[in-house]
Amino acid sequence: MNKLVNSVNRGLAAFTVSLSVFLVLCVIWQVLSRYVIGKPSTVTDELARYLFMWVALIGAAYTTGQKRHLAIDLLTMKLSGKKKLINEIVIQLAIAIFSYVVLVHGGSQLALKTLATGQVTPALGFEMGYIYFCLPISGALMIFYSLHFAFERFTQLKCGDI
Image (cartoon, rainbow, N blue to C red; front, side, top):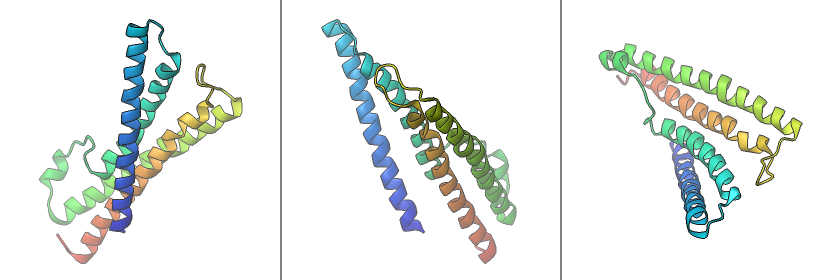
């Protein structure tokens, strides 16, 4: 299981960095075309906006997998032993439930409804539904990580590795 998690980590890191580099190049071109050439590029402006969505959401999933997400862990820090493990399991399950309800379910509905309406981006002509698929993809990745971490803690609890 750790090999799978490490593979997903490497893949997400590479994907997020690639999107970030492409996003920076789009913004640089946007600035150059606006201020040096005098004719702003509408394509890179729109593309940068949608790349930012993907970088933010896929980056959030990667951050969840690295346990570097924003957390208020005052209670967890005060607990020890079985209580701490149970608290961590509950937190990971709450993350998984939230990710499913909001990102996977809600994001999928948004993407599918947008695809059904045929809404396209003004400059690029992409279907907006495909752009919104970053929501359920990010949510599925967060669920993957949360269930992995919950299973690790459950195994520690079951084996008595406290």
